[in-house]
Length: 482
Ligand code: UD1
Ligand code: CA
Image 1 (cartoon, rainbow, N blue to C red):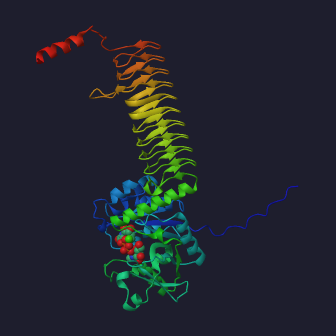
Image 2 (cartoon, rainbow, N blue to C red; image 1 turned 60 degrees about the vertical axis):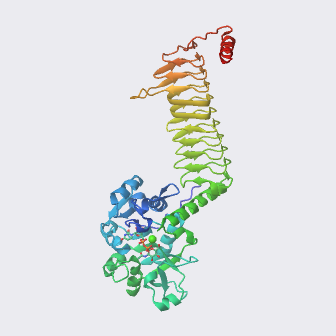
Image 3 (cartoon, rainbow, N blue to C red; image 1 turned 45 degrees about the vertical axis):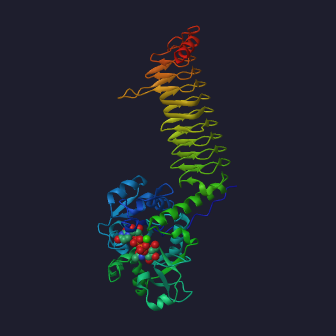
């Protein structure tokens, strides 16, 4: 018998509309760089991109706005592919001013989550915690706080009473009064906030620049809102590492190390073996399937994806490449934008340049360089070879020292090698050229013409032996010496 489900209670309140604003307009003077601060990289991508990627797990890209100013065009260009919006803060008159510039953009939202573009370790779960606590408390302003071992340099959180949920103010390090300094206030303002848009903008014009930096401090909104009887609360981050910001290159290196440590940790817990993980450099977006083993001093960069059961041996650098399952990468290989199918074997010391597609079970060996090639299933190029702009079939044997002469000084030309071809050692293939299926090339040939299927091609000078010539030469030289 069918029972009718009770109909859901009618929804009168639409879910609150959240925007994310990322503060990214500052110059980053202390980095001493031409590059804007938020474009400096850790874990293989810009600081700002880390924050955007975390925010995208909370709201869709169209509801994320980066507030940019210093080198705005350059910043925009670097992250525009994420599909986010931008607000221009032409002059950087402080974090409060950054939000003043966003008034129109945020007008259609109920709440805004304000994130710091220079604090890349923030996790989506922590942004969600801030959002949820803000909604649950029905607050006008909620800030994320932390209790780092050394609070020096941060704004401090003042609460109404010791264990009160209510915040009355945030005081910047430089503005602490002597008695506040004595109180050893440990709870710091992490620089992440949730605001209800309405109270924020009905009071934001009360911000003043009477402070050490003569800037509009967003942090002053805590006191302004609290005094106007709006609710200001704080929720503490579970991990105070997450809220660390970057101001110097020393901090940049430290956070990069922390991020990569976190990455190795995640991979190991997901089933990847990494020996001496502290020596490996694995970018944030790299994916590795379980039971793959990574030896010390390996770099996996960019959008690299590695299948299950691979072994990546030491000193290999793999960037923006995809490896299937059961691939063996012997020591010292360099891969860039390469595709490697299941069971292939690379190295030691192979160099796979962009557009290299290595087929199932194929071998690329010592000192072999490839570029824009397809190497078919089970084909082998084991030693000292250059293969560029080539399509190579299945079951092909490329002898040691084979070279595709793909460049005539102006244009690049294609080499096509059919299935089952045997290319003898030290062969030069002057492209454009085609070797038919089953062809056989004599060693040390310099081929300039196509080879038909199943034919032998030999293109080298004939050998000549002169009987006794060497012996006679030796005797002649010995006689001269006497
Ligand atoms: C800020 C907080 C401080 C907090 C700390 C946490 C203020 C006044 N202070 O200090 O309480 O403990 O973060 O890290 O907010 N920015 C703009 N436009 C501007 C100025 C800054 O977009 O006009 C951006 C910066 O690029 C940066 C972020 O805002 O990404 C924070 O600014 P920053 O100057 O680094 O603030 P802090 O001194 O770290
Ligand atoms: Ca900062």
